Length: 358
Image (tube, rainbow, N blue to C red; front, side, top):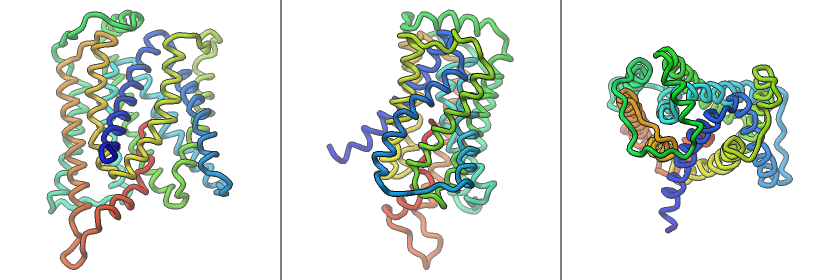
């Protein structure tokens, strides 16, 4: 059983992340403002992370300088506040399935920006380098298909839906033009790019401050403040800020406690146990679970273009990961031996221990 724990936890993480897309979509369909939702979920996450961080940190002092605080503010603004606000608008304009598909873009965009900042190298004369470049090209093709090609609509297998508000919202959006779908895909692009930049900036920051849990806790607190400023600027009606015993409150608690508080830390554990490549390889489970959940909960069909585009995104993910993994297990030259698997995992984990999307 012990050897199977990382597999079980990894599956649990992806199911939880899929639930984030589904619950967010349900809350928006029930009329909840996307910006207010982000503030509440970050507030719920803060209530979980702050006490947990203080308990695990103990009496050890790890002071943050003013420079560090400014850096964390910018990093959280890009990777959490901007990315999640854009993500909320995107799935509100498109679908939970498409939002889950965007998760497969993130390792590719992260690698792209790491190359631009010279944190990664691409050797086109080797199979690993070619695989990475091909992965980026496939990712771009998949994103283009998602944005510009819908294709035939494939009806859902189940006609009964759990969330009745969703049907009205979906009918409202389906009556809009192709421009609405493209706007949603544009915001998904912003999300993927923001998360790619976010992971690269986190890797740089953690080299000088190697305490990922405190770092993530500070990001959550700052993003809560940032998202409050955005939400109060975009929506000042007190009625929209009210939470009742409904799907809005459930979605907030789900994302704040299960996603931010539990799944993020569980993901760090899986990365430490099996390495970042293993965790990234399970990402397509998120998309599969979301498709199934959309059918069961919303009776939501899917466009053929979404299937083709999502499949290309999964292919691009595995292409980049294969190239990355090939470099990790191949010695740089004949005179320098390859690092043992455990040491390789620990070195890579230092820069990817915070590779959670949420």
